[in-house]
Length: 261
Image (cartoon, rainbow, N blue to C red; front, side, top):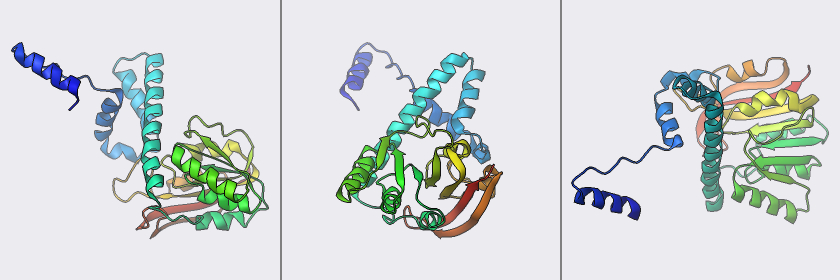
């Protein structure tokens, strides 16, 4: 307990009254709402979009609801960055080698412009750069990005590593020959890739698949394939395999898809 809380409690007892309950933070209110959702996680709608609807139902003006959601997004990104900072600082709890699906996809195209979404410490970005790709990556982890930049400098490779969350990063329009979304903790980027890829560009996705309730950023059976309607599917599989993260056998979904529209 912090010293300020102790002082408040002591003063209240001395006055013969109950100490005032601290007000909930916006993040605490969001987590409480999230725990009530249950099966609602099965929808493809983003949780924060649904939470904005709830804020409107609770009487907030649209501008106030938008401001609250923006603050939540920034705080969630900050906490995610700190979480991954600890992981990268402690050493690999993941496969440090390039993702096998990405290696397969890279062999299908000559080098071009590549975007690595949630690049972490750069294992996939460095692989692409060594093979002649011009790579940009972004992540919320400062520690991961520092490790990626350091590896690129040692190998004398060009690499643009940007500190950003997916919602702040500018994906551009028809800018990339390949976009890699490997174990991202969100699905929003998949929805944004259609405009960001050049004609004939490849999207590479590997992610967790829900088993039971699952997590918001894991995919339901067939969900990723539905999101990829209009793409040419070069590879799609829903399997149980050893994940790059935690190195445990879990349900996964993998896809290599080409923009053709």
